[in-house]
Image (tube, rainbow, N blue to C red; front, top):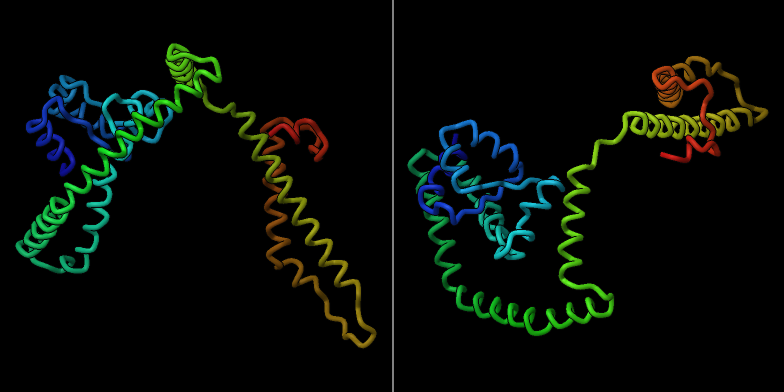
Length: 255
């Protein structure tokens, strides 16, 4: 509800001049579109990108014209810094809690406004450097590779088509990968058990023999290996594997 109230406020104040960043953006979009904010949200053609290649390929801030490389970084720094308030307001009353939060952000604004001239100056020089130097380098690279702007736009379209048509990993491949990992763990544990048995076979002449059967049955490495063996058999049954894959088999090497 808190997030929805913020979205409602910024839609009223900023209108179409709005870009929202949220870590699980597509899920938030779904939530917003199921509320009374849906009409206004759709009217402004808003979208919140998430950590997903297909979504980011269209909505990432580096794709949107006019967006900067550092946009939203300040927002993260503000809220990261505001975590310093936690020990102060943890047990404070509602009044004092609001008071300290308000004071923190007012002080943040004052500090930022004091440095805004220097920030704008540095960003201006950075922009000039990109235009005057990086653009020339970029043109030289295009010339050396024999590509034009239309090629770059076409590659972007091809990437979009590829990401949209990219399917999920086949279940057989997922199970095959898990099966090989289990075989590798089983082989590693067998080597450890073999080393332990070789060590136990070297018995000093003055050593008093004590049965190790109880220790063997409760040893974690034996119990782990037994569990892995059972998992391997279960996967073999599920995948219809009639022979156990060996490290040199093509099926073993494929995953």
